[in-house]
Length: 426
Ligand SMILES: Nc1ncnc2c1ncn2[C@@H]1O[C@H](COP(=O)(O)OP(=O)(O)OP(=O)(O)O)[C@@H](O)[C@H]1O
Ligand SMILES: [Mg+2]
Image (cartoon, rainbow, N blue to C red):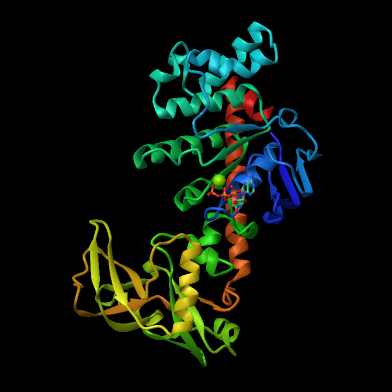
C-alpha cells in the first residue's frame, strides 16, 4: 500500500489543450478517493497518469514517497481494474487470479498460498475451478480484484467500472467494492461521473471541472459546504435549487418571499445587487406539517404547485418562478455544463409523503432558512460557506476511516492469519 501525492500535475495533449490543469492532490495510504466531474473534465486522463499509461506534461507524481513520472506502468506496481474485468475466458478462476504470478515466474507453492489467501478474502473459494463465463458479474469483478491482490499492488485504480451494468447490479457491486476496500485497506482511486457512487464510496471526493480541481472533501462537506455553484449543483439529487435573490439588510428577497439571514451571512452578502440563493429540495416542507416550535426558525411562503410526484416514501412538488434574463442565461450555462437536461425556472421541493398539497393549487410552504447558501452569480463563489464547519466534517470522516482501518487490520492480524492481513500490510 502507498500514498499517492500529485503536485501541480498538467497534461496537455497534442493540440496544447490542458486536459488536466495544475492538479495537486494528496491521497493517503489506504484512502478511498473518488474523482468525479462531467464528461471531458479530465478524470480518466488523471487516472492514466497515475498508472503510467499517459505521459505527464509537467508536475510530480509521487507514489509511496517515490517520484514515478519516468517509471513504466509495470514498475509502479499499481493495479488498474478495467470495466470489462479483462479476464481470460479459457482459464479457470484460479489461473485468472494467479496470472500475474505466473508472469513473474513465482514458484508453484507460493502461487497456491497467495491465490488461496486472496480467494478466502474474496469468498471465491468454491469457484476456483470454474471458468469466468459461469460466474455472475459480481464474482467476475472479484476475480479481477483477486488478481490485483495477489500482486500485492500498492493501489487499486478503477475507471467507471460499473457504468455499463444495470441499476440493480450496479448497486450490488458498489456495496461489494466498498466492503472489500474497507477490508483490505488498499489505497483506491475511483473515477465516476455518477454522483451516487461518489457520495457512497469515497472517503473523500475530488470534484473536477475542465481539468481543474474545484473541491476535495468528504461527501458530507461537499454536500453541506460546497465552495461554489458548480459543486453545489453537481452534488445532490434532485439537485439544489438556485433562485435569484437581492439582499436587503439581513433579508434576501426571493421569488418565494423573504428569507432571513443570520448576521454573519448577511454581512457576507452585503454589497451585492443580484445573488443566487441555493436551496436543497429537502430544506422545504409542507408548512402545515411543521412543528409550531420549528416554524419560527424558517420562513413561510405561499406558492402555486405545478406538478407533484408521489413516490411512496417521499413526495416532490414543482413550483415555477420568475427569474431575470441574466440569471436565466447563467443557469442555462451551468446546467449545460452539469450535463443536466433542462433548465428550469421551477423549484423542486421535497415534502412529506403524507402531505395533501396537490398540483394546480396554492399551498403554504416552510423553508429552513438556516441552511441556505448564497452564491455570487458572476464568480460562482459560495459567499456563505462556513469553511471551519466544512473542515470539521472532513476531519470526522477521516478519523472514522483511520479507526475502521485499524480495526480491520487488528482483526486481520489476530484472528484471521490469511488473505486480508498479507494483502493489506504488503
Ligand atoms: N488522446 C487524446 N488526444 C487529445 N485529447 C484528448 C485525448 N484523450 C482525451 N482528450 C481530451 O482531454 C479531455 C479530458 O478527457 P478525459 O478522457 O480525461 O475525460 P473524462 O473526464 O474521463 O470524461 P468521461 O466522463 O467522458 O470519460 C477531453 O476534452 C478530451 O477530449
Ligand atoms: Mg473517462
